[in-house]
Structure formats: C-alpha cells, structure tokens
Length: 336
Ligand code: RIB
Ligand code: CA
Image 1 (tube, helix red, strand yellow):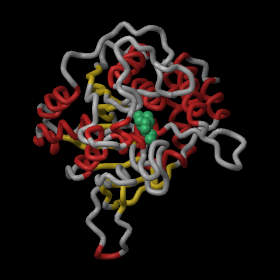
Image 2 (tube, rainbow, N blue to C red; image 1 turned 90 degrees about the vertical axis):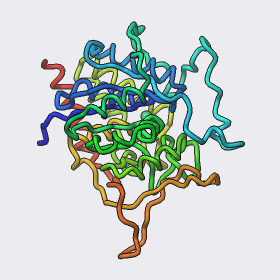
Image 3 (tube, protein in one colour; image 1 turned 180 degrees about the vertical axis):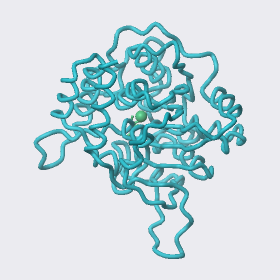
Image 4 (spheres, rainbow, N blue to C red; image 1 turned 90 degrees about the horizontal axis):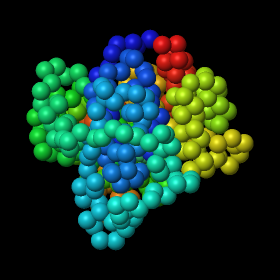
C-alpha cells in the first residue's frame, strides 16, 4: 500500500470525469492538493472554471483549495485556417446559457457556488508556486489540454527542474477521441502544448485512452458506489452516469455501458502506480496540420534504432484496483 502524502497540482477542464477526479483528490487524504488550475477544453474556460469552483465548494474545501483560471484558447490550433479546432464553437457570449442535456460538460449540477477564482492567472500562479519550491516534490496531474503547463514552461523554463512528475490524461495508441480520426481530445485541442511538455525532459506518465477504456466503470459499478450513501458518493455515481450517457460508450456486444472515467484514473495512478501497465517509449505529437493533427505517435521500432524514451505510456490499466480505490476513498470519507 503506497500511503505517502502526495503534493499535487491538478490542471482541469472540468467536465464530468474531471469532477470525479476533483472529488477524489479532495477526499483522498494521501493527497495534499496544492491548488487547481482550469483550462479551456470540454467547455470554454469561464465554464470549466465555474464547474471547478462548484466542485471545491461541494466538497467544502474552499478554505484550503484555491482555483486559478487559465488559458482560454490553445497555443496554435485555433489560429489555423479551416482546422476543426478553429471551427470549434465560438465561446458563448456572456450570460448565454450552457447547453444542458446530454453533453457531459455542461454546468455540473451542484448547489449554486459562491466562491471565486483567485486573482492570479493559472500560468502566473504555476510559475510563482513552482519557482519557490525547494524540493522537487510536486506532481502535476494534467487532465485537460496542456495549454497552461506548456505556457508556464515556455514562459519560465526554470520551473521544469522543480516538477517531480507530470501525469497526463491524454493521447492514445490504438484509439481516438470523438473529435478526430486519430487524436484524443485533450491533445487534439492543443497538440503543440502536449508536444512542448513531451519535449520538456520532465518525468512524464501518459495515461491514454488505451488505459482509460480498459478500466471502464459500468452503471452497476456506479450504483454500488452510490450505495456508499454519502452526498459525495451519490455525486460521483451521478457524474459517472452523466458521462456515460453523454458518450453512449457501448461496445457491440456489451449489455452495459462501459464508462471510462479518464481523469480519475490519472489521479489514481499517482497513489497506485501499479494501476497502470506501462512501457517507457518515445512519444511525440503530430503537429503537422493534416488528418492526424494531434495524434500521439509512439516509436514502435524494435532495437537500437528506436528513439530514447521520453515518457512512461500506459497501454492498459487494472480496472478492479481503480474501482476499489474509488470506493475506498469514499468509504473512508464517510467514516470521518
Ligand atoms: O479524452 C478524454 C479527456 O478529454 C478527458 O480529460 C475529458 O475530461 C476531456 O477533457
Ligand atoms: Ca478533462
């Protein structure tokens, strides 16, 4: 059992699976959550920030956990003419309602939030926080597009040696996300940002769709989680089902939805690295602007011609361990 305290920063684009990860990060006492940065991704950054604030207040952690609003646009992709990213919905005008219904990343249903984001932007706070770290003890858990992390690295490279590890929910080997034939969503939104981080020399673990799809949660699992009987367990079950219903993730011969709660698996791997089955590989992002823009490409050459590895890439995950961690965190929180 790996029960050392982990000092973490979470970078999120809060939609439903980010929200599950946030609840678990705030309830699992082996995590020391140093702060949360929000980024454009599932929704425009105003809304991902609001959803993040909702989750902090829902967990009653507003006195100790602060939220810093980040980048509202990717570094390059929306500048390009006629790429799908550049034709993404224009950020909603002030006050325009968020589409409720099936989209998993609409406003998260929790009581109205009253807390506000901090004055510092995400990149400013990341640089100041990491610059003043004496020991290399902070793990960044990045579960949205990598825009904030890449901008902070480019703005002040002195932070790079201060980062213990970066765990990224993103990328894919044998899968793609719903927006592209080749790329997973977080990388697809900002391919150049992911490539900047991959080239940083940091200790990087990539938690791709291959791992998150293999550690799916079913509606029956979600109801077992709900049966723990706390408001947090009920909210986690709701969020799992909301994500699954929105994505209708059903295999051809499955009678049940197989719901990948991507971001929570990335967080779980900080505490239980053994939840992931990884290989050290050389991984880069296709930043040309063709059909595979945003694809994470792994060097599959055997032997000495392969490039030096730059990350630990998870090809599979332990579904049982992942689900038992979720239940364990929620049950322990109930008994507190
Ligand atoms: O592809 C899955 C990732 O994209 C998750 O982090 C989800 O929240 C979205 O950001
Ligand atoms: Ca996310």
